[in-house]
Structure formats: structure tokens, C-alpha cells
Amino acid sequence: MKKAIFAALSATMLLASCNQADAPADTDAANAAARKLMVEVVDPQARLLWGVAGHVSDESGDHALRPTTDEGWKAAEDAALALEEAGRTLLTSPYADGRGEDWAAFSRGLTELAERNRKGVTDRLSDDELLDLGNQLYNVCSACHEVYLPEPPEA
Image (tube, rainbow, N blue to C red; front, top):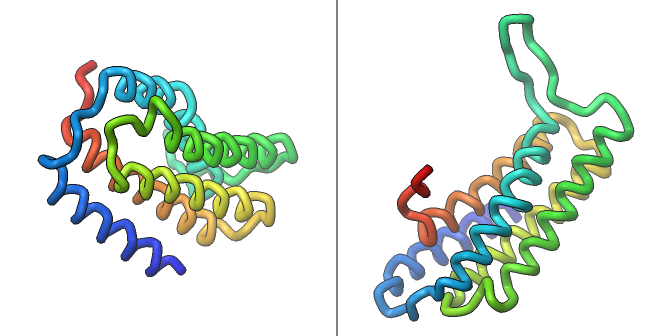
């Protein structure tokens, strides 16, 4: 399944980059709506979800990121649900206006991988499994950014 998702996204990225010049210009409304959704929902919820597995080291030592309370697990599940909904929202107007099938493929990929992450959190999979799911989600986000945000936004 992972290979199929990666292959589909890779093919989509190649097609998107080849057809970018032929694609209709993105509208200001679509760009503004997408940017707002990314800043207010997708980015913070993805970061929360990515923080449920692994370790971080700082001056006070090594700390596991895995939630230790029901509330922590619920927050991760809610983050994944928010990402699922964001993926569906990105398929609607004005977000998808003036964009091609690649936008739809990335949005569906976000929805599907957010759902898989939610199920992984609900099932409290191992850290390795949750890291793998988080990496797959990150790859979809990165692939979309390569096509639609080739330059980092100015601060």
C-alpha cells in the first residue's frame, strides 16, 4: 500500500511539473484561502500529529514524545480528524479553483494519510509505525509544496 501511494504521488508530481505551464493561473482567492487554511489548520495540526512518536533530546535529557495520557491521545486523534477535513476542504471552491488534477490528488492524499494516521493513533501503534505514518503524511505535504509552493514564503 505504501509503495502504491508513493508511486501515485511521484507520478502526479512529475505530471504536475510537466503541465504547470499549461495550467490555468491560480486565482488570488484560491491562494489566499489555501494559505489561510494551511496556517490556521493544516500546519499546527500536522505538527501536533507528528509529535506523537519518537524522542527529543535537550539540556535536561532524552524525552519520549508519545502521549502518556488519554487527553494526549485524544488531541492527536483530533489533529488527524482536522487534517482529514482539511484535505476534503481543499477539494472545494475556492481552494481548488484554477488548479489541476494534481491539486485534487494531493488533497486526497492528505485526507487518506490523515485517516491512516488517525487509525494508527486510535490503535496506539508502536512508535516505529506511527513515525512511518507521519513520514508518509509529511511526504504528501512536501510533494504538494514542491508544486504549489516552490519558493518558501517571505516572512
